[in-house]
Picture 1 (tube, helix red, strand yellow):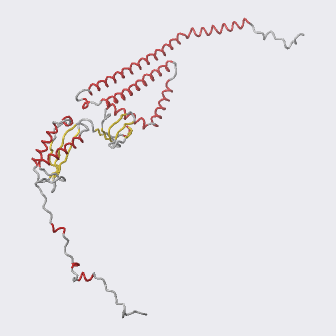
Picture 2 (cartoon, rainbow, N blue to C red):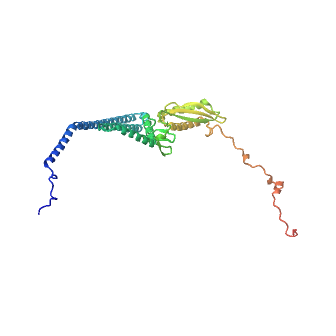
Picture 3 (spheres, rainbow, N blue to C red):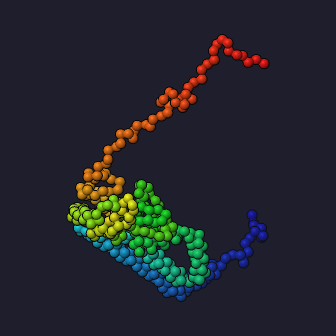
Length: 362
């Protein structure tokens, strides 16, 4: 059966194989021409980005390894000094290790941020991206984040400067104003202290306005001795001097005392007592132990020398007078005599007779 004429394909709608091949040939030719014209630029751009990334990675690895070696060398130096005879007086290995680790961590983070950030900006610039709006947006975002987290930024910066300036370290006894105690851990944001009663204080570095370090340099041990005003001051000085000489030659006080024990003089003079001040320069943190030992030895020496201390036992030559036996006897009382008016006034009133007693009626 013949097909209708409307259903037969038109000659114009039939694709021309030659035209299709020509269009494909032109497309391939254009693409090849585009690639041929730009491949050198693309290769240059790719090599440039690759070179930037390789240099950034190599520089970051080199800087981090250098900082790690520097920290390791610092720790080895601390361990070597600690093994010496006076190592405990010169350096605290744990304190120096934590300080070097904290400084190294900060330096590694800053170096990585600077190197990778610079490399990222260079890559974006090589790709032809306008960095002006990006840097402006980053600046605004940084200001907003810094304003919102200003306490965190303050704590971090304070911790960095405390570590760099070596204001305190692990093992130091400090007074931070809001809390006081022995430093257990030093962080970039929080300092951990152990109080005198064993409690742990977590103090934000940004809240520390002043620091009193009781473990750096040297400390002073001061002892006040109250004696009777009749005692001989040269004798007191002589006894204290002998105690100090004997204490300075014994272990471990020969290391804890960094200077001679001195009698500074009279601190206070009263009618019933006078106070003698004794002072000595000691190792940091050992002043309280030296004070307790000085009090112990001075008390024993004064007892042997017969020097009276206010509040202590009286010397043997000063015996107390016997007590008056009449002091425990009560004075005579007027009630002891039944004929006295006082005794008669306390006598009971006799009861009326049963018969013949008058009656009172209405």
